[in-house]
Image 1 (cartoon, helix red, strand yellow):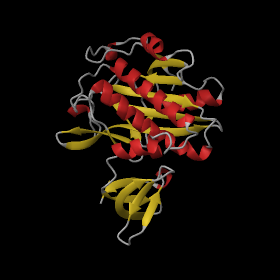
Image 2 (tube, one colour):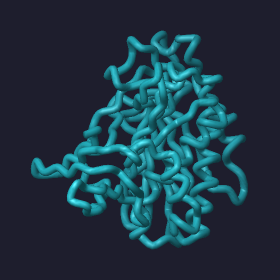
Image 3 (cartoon, one colour):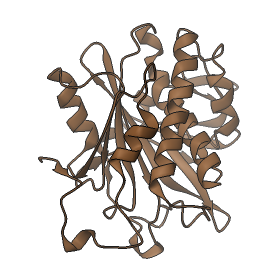
Image 4 (cartoon, helix red, strand yellow):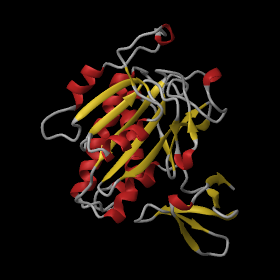
Length: 287
């Protein structure tokens, strides 16, 4: 699907409670000499910002630090091609292009976890909402004493040198708009603001901060503080979970740690500690 520029207008975009993003203000606030972000584009509607940015990177038309934001995604994707849908202008749906050439490829698997830490930190500061991380890629908020999913992260390789990281965050969705009862939004979690411009700036500045720390440490999750910070905010740890694996296999145990490769370590009833990688998980559920 061809992206439509956000300056286009029609009656379906007239919800006054959901004003459009200000692309010019976002560029002025984020793009600076020596900084990570090199360009910010806001489009009115597209299929998937991740798919668009992967294609642009493959064609050599996007540099590191490119940010692509959509007011609406009609074919938004999560991990394992699960669908992500939300009304127009009801959330933050964006992708960024990263080229961590100075980090060993074996450590690139930390990028979605790094993004989770950055998003949680940015939203805590800007929206006043405590965001927990469900390993490997979900963002959780508390609504009525229950943890519910308000966002997700998807990282994809783009050639040999780039990674596209996509983020979807429900901001103003009401109860009757939620795709499933287990979903949530920042508004339902009591956010002090649902103005998407400062929320997006805060998240991207936090992502720049953590990405710089991680790269400076050569991608070492311990030296950069990433491993410890992720574990501190990960609601999966300390719980007994069942990891559903390909081939109808499953593994049940207490989630006790995030190892140096970003894998979830499960302590089974047999007294064995089994690491499970994100690429091996079909579902991770409470046991």
